[in-house]
Length: 286
Length: 286
Image 1 (tube, helix red, strand yellow):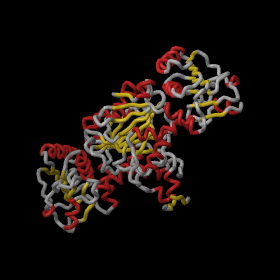
Image 2 (image 1 turned 45 degrees about the horizontal axis):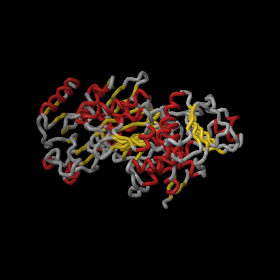
Image 3 (image 1 turned 45 degrees about the vertical axis):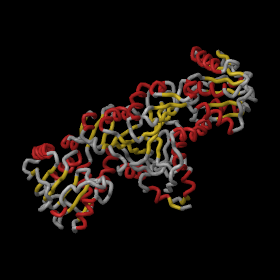
Image 4 (image 1 turned 30 degrees about the vertical axis):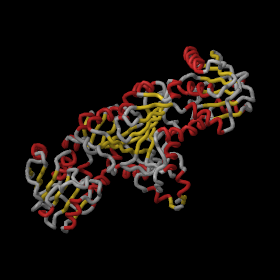
């Protein structure tokens, strides 16, 4: 029998306040979902704010996204949905309006109901990415940045980096068209920025960001040839589980600084709670 | 700062184990839902069993039931749905097969996925009703029982009481046809039982059960004229909130024994967890 005090409970990852019939519901939709860090982070944040809310993980296959989305928004006490891979792009057509970052990126990772019942989606990945780096002392200004993977997360990262005035932004995707498309959208928004595509070589780069899912599965290949990384480079991953991906492990072994996917997510939780309209509730101690 | 020990947390109403991306999800659907006792009971039971599961309340209007139901069952880590008023009858057509009690009553209050992906529904209200009474020393055998309200809950109660060999079973509903229909179904199942309809007068009854929602709202009328209750009668309510309904309060003031709706629900939690295929998990202490 372990004795523990109230304060330690208040910050326990994943623990909401006790549920009742009045609890407000939130969900994170992804495929896979087991690796998602949001249930741990959001429920702890709800508890910290004293809110009778819970966020549950939902494993939703791409073909089922629309059906699940429609069903969830017909639930009156469901107040918000968080979207993760592979739904960030496809969910855009299921909402009624987009926030500015979502509009730029063509991808959303959070949806809430407006007072008139319509749905609005916004994307906090980019802001979370920059905030997470900044909190650990890393700035993107004047850096040469290589982004591997130009899907939903890659788009968010590319636009967020572009806004920080990097020296150069290099975008790579196994699908050339996807990289080209993202590059032209970033260029349209920031015409003077040095944006290039087609090269995955990390040599000469100050920052290398893995925005693919490579590293989630044990026998995945590495996103780049780490032996071409310079020891002065910063290796960044957006994969959440494992916390130290093979890419980060190998880069770290070469002497590079590393930055895990968890920082990007943790930096978003507060912003998404505010987007959901959640303030601080009556402190409910349990 | 309050110190509390592990054991007290294990039985705290509504508190699940901390959520992660691997948490299995359950939901209770009702309209209204704020009064539902299931989130408190099921989450405490999940925690007691050491299971990474959570049950969330979902406020679903009748017109949205099918849309929500379809959406939820497309979620791969959703393993069970509990149904409460007013969905117990309408959900029958949304499942692929019915258990024996559900088949008898034409109403379900729990649904799970079969290994082949089909959905099966069963009704635990009747068994919970009888078990809840029995746990407090009340037997229905040889009693004259008046059931007010012949909807989903009333049907469950009527069939469950019929199985206990009461002296007489009197069914009342503001809709005569609904009472007649239930009476004829009970008679078809128990041909020798004394089943009557059309009278709401509690005089001469040993047990009076409110199976309507009267009492949930402050200015509801009473389900029966309590001044016609005999002091030897047992007054039973299935309304969960308030725990002491005006009907139970008035009956108690007249000297009648009373029995709250919470007992029926509490007696079902274990049975429904077993129906959901939940055993006892690896003890996860948090």
